Length: 342
Image (cartoon, rainbow, N blue to C red; front, top):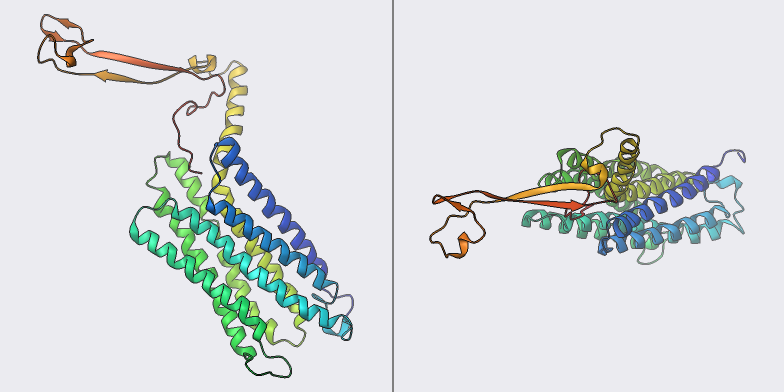
């Protein structure tokens, strides 16, 4: 069975997911700090921490693959390599479980900055604490699982498996719940309807991570009880790295609005420079709005009548037009005071 191995698929998936998650995370920071001139928040630093945990997990798993992880048990040197694999696998899984819970924590912290209603904050804090609590529990409990020769104080394998399925399933279920949260928050923001829908869809991509997590949790019992567990564990780890990457993508894509607007603005500029849609804005001028002063006078010397033209005891309307010059962009929203949320 030497020709049958999950090592190539596991290694390739980990490398691709390391790069993909890093690229999406860096684009998030570029859009926030460079394009939007916003400071990085706690959710950003938590996301970086989760990626570091994920990287450590991948390195340990790749090292364990050199000693038999992903191979059939009959193809492993049980004397020299197998003990090393048994030592590295649980340590790698410890960092893997923590990376999943911390990445979800980053998304929850982002939502906590947006919600205003008390019940929403309570719900998010509940999910934040319970997700991290359950995942930390299984990350630690696995080290106390009884071996072939049970020791005093060890935890039976079936109990560890049940806790692992519960933690993974609960985390995945919370992903699905969190995917519905953005619609409650974003819809009330001062944004165009088209942009609201786009942000809600982007932030709801955590649903993908939830589906992956649910499928992963269904594979845990069979793999854990299989005597050829080194081969099956690699499959679980493949789904785990996919779940982490999906979570990072879902947490990063909503911040790409400035980048999309930047490329859209360049496309509009090229059209206008070609002679299409020539308006005052193409020459860098934009009328932002006007103020209409309808003040009434109580006397000729009152403050409210200053600057108002009076003719035949009638107060005429005074209109002030505000014009702003913007040579950097031709976007309809360029130059407006704008508070960048995503």
